[in-house]
Image 1 (cartoon, rainbow, N blue to C red):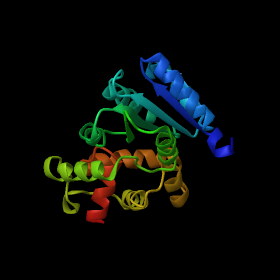
Image 2 (cartoon, rainbow, N blue to C red):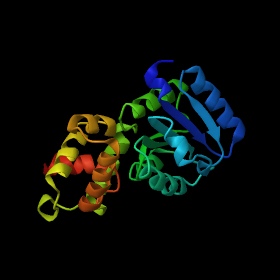
Image 3 (spheres, helix red, strand yellow):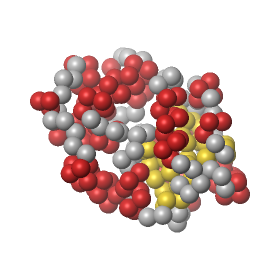
Image 4 (cartoon, one colour):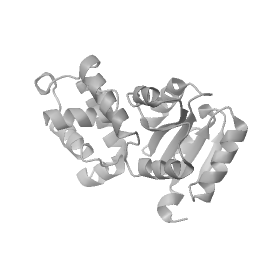
Length: 216
């Protein structure tokens, strides 16, 4: 396992113990550091600080994704490290499209996703990518433009630094890469991103990047 992999941790979250154990065993064989936990609250802020990147792989059928988000949003603001969410066991693309609009959710996998694709997706999420089928992203963005209007550039008072952060984020950069590019701490970058989301009325990174492409 290389140094980058050692700084990454996956937590399989769900109530189906056998399924989670098998998934954990598979990911460990793929050289992905993985633990199975029944509840997201089992992971403390101190634990999150031990890894550069923490990905919570949440079972769609046995866990309330919104509760996971609420808990991790609070924890995320206390740590510099990346805290990410992906959801597995999802029924269909319509459900995936709804998940794409949730804060911190960087990917989704349907119940029939091949193991190799799951492994590939997890590694892509760690690399800063959003992992949803193209059709799902297109559907989400169309709905977002229709029903969840972000503010126009003229309505938003972004600081020069926030514009810089947003421009780099729009290239697909991870928080750590944005921090390195702008010579700022990862925690400062997180603060800027939360402020940007609030100002432009975006609920997640996908909306913010889409807004940047249309307005900057």
